[in-house]
Every structure is written in structure tokens, then in C-alpha cells.
Length: 100
Image (cartoon, rainbow, N blue to C red; front, top):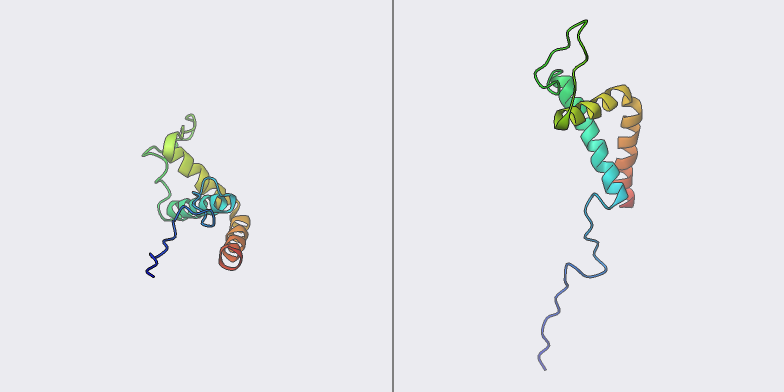
């Protein structure tokens, strides 16, 4: 008797099809990668997130808005909290390799 082949759906309950926004460990991984990437880019090109403006002594501070402002803030976090970000990256790498 002929049996048709059984196909496994990618939407079966055993397969997790969550995006990085809804999975907490993936969200933390994405945030750490963004922080590390923007800090590295800013180290290579220090004025890349300043939107072409220079800080002049005695003038008001540069308003950093939008995507450039968000990237500038992430790179600032990466600069100032560098040891903690490095430790977090190592822990997250171990989590992805051994646990996930």
C-alpha cells in the first residue's frame, strides 16, 4: 500500500518562529551588537554621527536627533561602559554557543 510522504510544516508548534523583538535573549544580542558596532564605527570615524556639525566652544550643544542621534548614544554607551559591554558580549556569546 502506498503511503504519501509526511511533510513537516515550518509553522508546527515545535518550531519557534519568533523574531528578535519578542525573544529576550535575541533582543539583548541585537542591542549588544548595535552598541559594539556603533562604538567601533565611531572609533574609526569620530564625526560620523555628528551629522556634519562641529562643536564650537561657547555655542550651544549639538542637537543629536533621529538615527544619527540614536547611533551616537549607542556609541557613547559603548565607549564609556566598554569593560561591562565586553563582559556582556562574552557572556552572550557563551549563552548562544552552549545554551541556545
